[in-house]
Image (tube, rainbow, N blue to C red; front, side, top):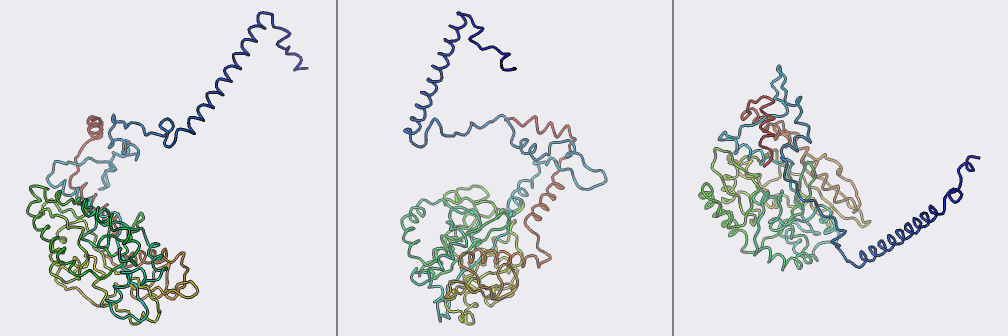
Length: 464
């Protein structure tokens, strides 16, 4: 009954309204046909336009310049509220947001030192390949120079430890103090590396990651680690490079206070990780082309003397991680650890021993060796020697598969270094050390301002 209560349109419309209704139906049909035609044409144009299509490609909007980045991040973090500006009268802790007086002479130096404190721990792992029956360091170091001298599983294991990085273009830890946290833009070396890089990648047995040009690198939010595969140096290489490095350091040390021409001419871009204090004389960074050398040489001691005057380095208890790939498991008893220790130099040991103690060439409590032996079943037997010897996930005597071997070895090395650092009462984690530095700067350079004055200083000079 309800449906019949509404009459049909044809029953109530007049002759004039009927003509108008028919005209409206025709316009709707024409519009639908035109829209279908336009859609078909647009689809056809997109299919024949190629990639990328200028009409459909996403383009970033033009950057907005009418805002203050400092105010924006403070607002997003919730520091612009009145509660954040109020200090507790009975507490020595300052409010969450304070203003610093940058007019002090030492402010810039302390700010550089804060930037120089690493935000993550940095460690090194040295990987050696031991063929059956080998007992000398020269034989072991020579194995990785040729792809035919190592097992294919060893190369697969190396690739699972981390990703390869070019030292001259890498801004993080490289396994050696003299080449870390700096980048070098040298057109000649880049062109030469491109020309010979393909053959070197295909024919080497891991020696390309010996720390002179490349290393294997892995990093997460709290740590970074470099995997180095030491190899024999070509004859006539090493001493001249180190001598050139120190001559460059000596000349740039005398000119750094007045000009940065020397650094610019060499193409070095220091990242201020080894920034000096405001009262000390600025030091130039060492060249990234030098390779790790045997500890105890006069060149290394001189470099250590220079680096010891710089702030920011987190010198905790040293632990050296060595991974030895054994073709014959019984060779772990005759592994020449003492002879291979000089090949595991990172430069940090010279800073730790700078007070006068000489470098040690014997096995120390801070050395951990992880032996990896491939079994006929396709699994890998693990043997761990050294202290601390208990660090998961790998334990002595474990047998693991090839799919998780690299991950477990890497995580065990990271956990071993963390465990060694936690055993020292004098060690402070990176975030703790940075927080302490920030608190010191607040107490030293804090500008006493009321809430209206602080808001005025932020908003009056925000838009530039």
